[in-house]
Length: 200
Ligand SMILES: [Zn+2]
Image 1: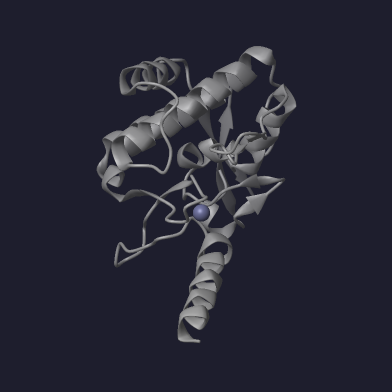
Image 2: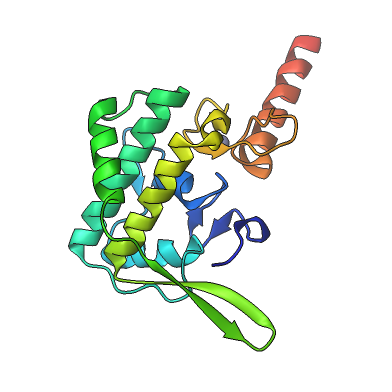
């Protein structure tokens, strides 16, 4: 598995700003509070591409329509759990109980199995299994995220137009934006303009 911290926030058209795949999955429905959200998981192939971009595997197995539906259900469960538990700028799509049920059901599916891969002096962990198992792996990560110590660090971006959640790993625990380059810069520009207006 590759390390997320050395990768960029945008990969293969998907956003990875949250710090781990589980909290980044909801970002695959862009502009979710707008009248016409943009679905980035439109086809089964998109699910396969996301798994590779998320760093879970270099060669994801093929995905089918069932995997697509499962990935979307998990995504909405994670988003709803984050909104219910950690606040949010918009209403969740469903109840906390139904989100919890979906998450735990997907997490109960057989997950991808790790294998040690050695090549010369380098070592890596390779995950194996059908696409359903990769989706279950993301669900299990979400279970540990919401149920473990990291749950205290889940935050939503403070941009009023952004719904992305992230895990705040800053030392001071005061991270405000999903992306310093994205929402952080936009907010600074808006603040600068507001001050200039008020100043004269
Ligand atoms: Zn943001």
